[in-house]
Length: 338
Ligand code: UT7
Image (cartoon, rainbow, N blue to C red; front, side, top):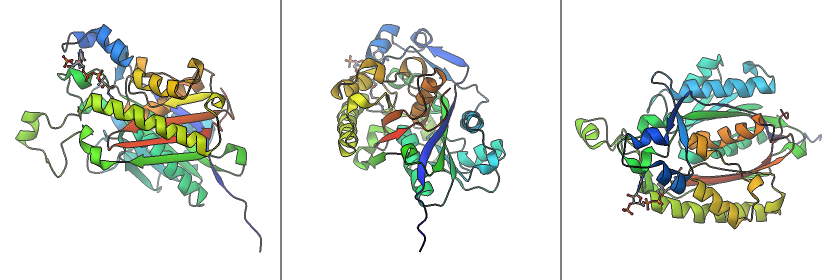
């Protein structure tokens, strides 16, 4: 009986879209009781980009996806699964943002779905793409992290409005027979007992749209910031140490550590715990803020566009977000160098 060759998931291409409008710390000083100095010291954020009023999550996701597809040099007809991670979908119930993105890209008759894993969404999608590809069900999976986070931010709440930005990142994950291109490992996990740490109470079946929702601002994101911060540092440090140990890879051998960009102090604490050198750690939070599911692919795109990310180089991704969810991944960049 002939044995078919194993098929591996490989990270073939990256793209991102950053909206034009900038919201600086100086702008925020005029909106809430805060200072540029406080924001920089506590978060590392200098500015974030916001989508235009008539620019939606699907628009940003479609633009990032188009770049990723064009860079790989395939046609949209070759995409056989469209996955979008977002907590700020165009519509909260239906249709999914992945369906709208597919339409905007002219992708027809292809399975398309959203997932909700907050900031962990993109790495969660990598695990799903890997399963679809390695089971032989799909060949070219479009994975998108896109957020118009400004649509759920209360710009009178200084504890959250300084943090978040809008944007999108996308990748094409393709089937490969080359073992050196394969995802080494993806780990994704969750603990719903911390659901109230990071929550948007409405709209949903608990709080359908009502006057009460509007009066109490239940449609805005709420976060137990300090508790989330401490748990993020502890969980990520443990998670990243575990994925490295399990795969017998030393932290000093990782050229690109690409963490979720929520707060520079979290990135630094995890990087220090892993004894990472500064040049190994990718930091974009200063210019984009926290873009939730878009943060990791936007950061990967940044180092690709600047020529820092080369074909074959290993990436270590880690992320933490609402749910609570967390995830990490070890994989080579299998696309073309710039
Ligand atoms: O992406 C998903 C995961 N999210 C995260 O990982 C975010 C995690 N959390 C954080 O990044 C940080 O907790 C924050 C940046 C949100 C807050 O920083 P913190 O060092 O944890 O501050 P805190 O919440 O303990 O607040 C310290 C003080 C408080 O004042 P008092 O009670 O000490 O008088 C706050 O009211 O800072 C005050 N404060 C501010 N002051 C000036 C909170 N926000 C601001 C602000 N400007 N924007």
